[in-house]
Length: 158
Image (cartoon, one colour):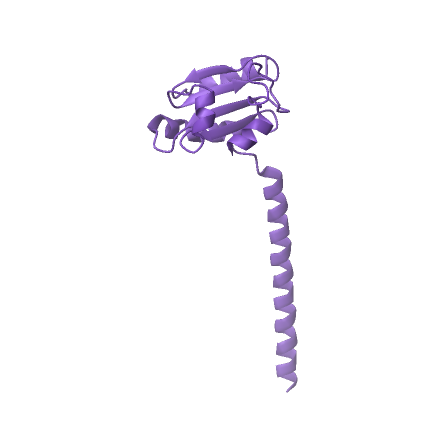
């Protein structure tokens, strides 16, 4: 009888210590993922665009950027091959420049009015929006180095 009680107590101690260790590991992993998780690209609707980038309905003749950091806006379509080519590049850049710039994506099929407002006729079309001054537009699938150069010279003005 003593052996059974002793075995039960030992198994409870072992199980509780394992549970504690797992709980500590999960907490540690959660804290690490919070620290290392970086912002990716951000998909925008027209309403979000009007509040985060520029409200062209309120100010149709003046570009007044509303963001707190410069941004890149990727006008794309889900079926577009070149758009698919630059998507991982933009994700990488969003993580690399986390805290310095935003990288927004606008699906031209879902936001046709927004694409029309900016005269988007070819995709991908990229809009580089500095904090001050007019945005600069580029068309086509740019290589990563071209994006980095534009970020440095146009957006971060280094």
